[in-house]
Length: 310
Image 1 (cartoon, one colour):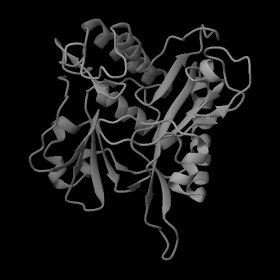
Image 2 (image 1 turned 135 degrees about the horizontal axis):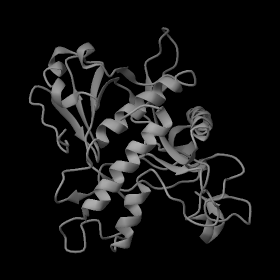
Image 3 (image 1 turned 90 degrees about the horizontal axis):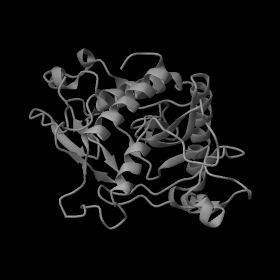
């Protein structure tokens, strides 16, 4: 099946086009249509490739894995999913069933919390320089790929499209969104991570870290406070680092089933901050073998985590 890197549904209003997802309004004023394309990005740069458009099947893998996790983790916190069944979506969406099948979700509109809720089971880049992560002091003696003593909530700002998220200390995050909401978000994120990491471990996978996003919806009871829900994608290889447990050895980088493979390739080709537009100003184009390797990794982690075929 052909890859989809850009959508254009003339009967639907495009709300935003992100690095991977296109979001549309529908005839249901309380719902949005999330469409996961096959675009690939790294370090906030959307990558090009010459022979094949995007990463084949990537949008479907992201969507199906999110659906798996939404169901599995629903007892911890509600989420924004209404349905992934095109036949249950509004008529103006059904018209595009052939393109949407398997890669789209109808979701509740929510007030997005302007915080990236990152939970880490391992950390290295900042720690090796300063012994900290997001300004949080960690025990001495950790080595690359070490498991942290406890999962750590490490928030970042949620940047506008084209800008970079900024890692911040929890105290800054608390001021940014308010103390009560911060406590609710951080506690939910840690519970979600712990449950997901336990399931992944049963499947031979280490969940090194992941990023959650949350939103607020109107209360179900009159006079109540707004309800916190899980939104966007969840625990995909775009938003997480997954390592195979077999062969895991602290003290070095680990093979991965996620976007780190693409990041490492990009750095090996000379990428660094300030070169987002490429060495020649024409962007970054990934090699065909990197496209193939990325597709295989994404599909394999889906099989391992869900026990299903992508």
